[in-house]
Length: 83
Image 1 (tube, rainbow, N blue to C red):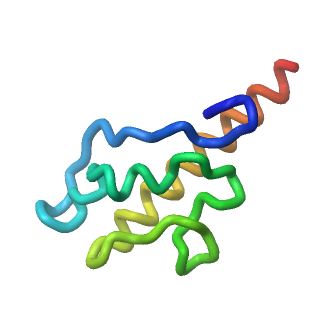
Image 2 (cartoon, rainbow, N blue to C red):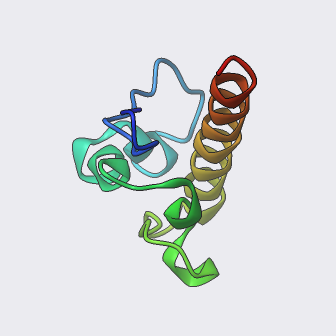
Image 3 (cartoon, rainbow, N blue to C red):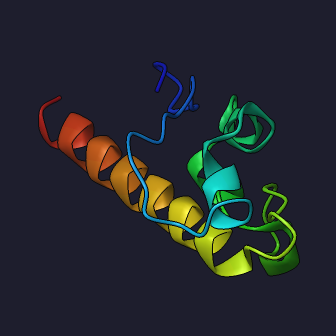
């Protein structure tokens, strides 16, 4: 995250998803969608955000998106508390 609270990038360190479907959450075509987004944009496009879900893996896509948003919210809260 940069000083404007925009995502610089994300990494999926591990997963136990279905090969060929849910495991696509680790692909650059999915993770790069988060770059440059602010908190308000971190949700699936079908939910009004800017992240396109992986076909056949909407639940996995939503889980990653929710986890990223939750962590960004925590980081922003911590930064604001420490100012």
